[in-house]
Amino acid sequence: MRAMTRMDVDAVLAIEQAVQRFAWTCGNFSDALTCGYVCSVHEEGGEINGYAIMMAATDEAELLNIGVEAVQQRGGLGRTMLLEMLGAARDRNMKRVFLEVRPSNVAAIALYRSAGFSDIGVRRGYYRNAENSEDALMMACELMPGERANG
Image (cartoon, rainbow, N blue to C red; front, side, top):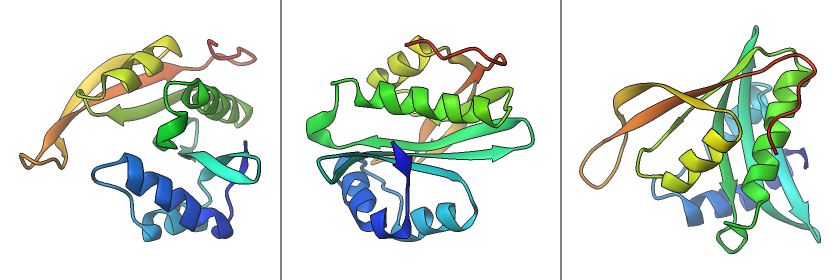
């Protein structure tokens, strides 16, 4: 993985639009870069096939977005990127990482739990969907100094 640049936004946006029903916009990705969020891409053979965005503040971080090109899904790339982001949070002396995920995204929930995240709450009506909204499952991963994430 490497740091995302403005030149990567179009490729990242194309993946986001292909894999998310309610995708982030070009502006969302540009704003994340401008705000200094941890924005990373996974590149293979000169092609971007995954990305992750994390906001770090004080001693906590929030994983805002992680996406993997459809043909690469279920092959371990999501896990690799998640563990890289947890490592980046640890390197910045974060104590925990939060995220929200759709309860319908069973594969993502399983991935997050296997990496040490646990359920901490629910945000009612957080996500838009075809029926107007879907709750968000809130999860957190406690980071211990020097500890490497579950792999």
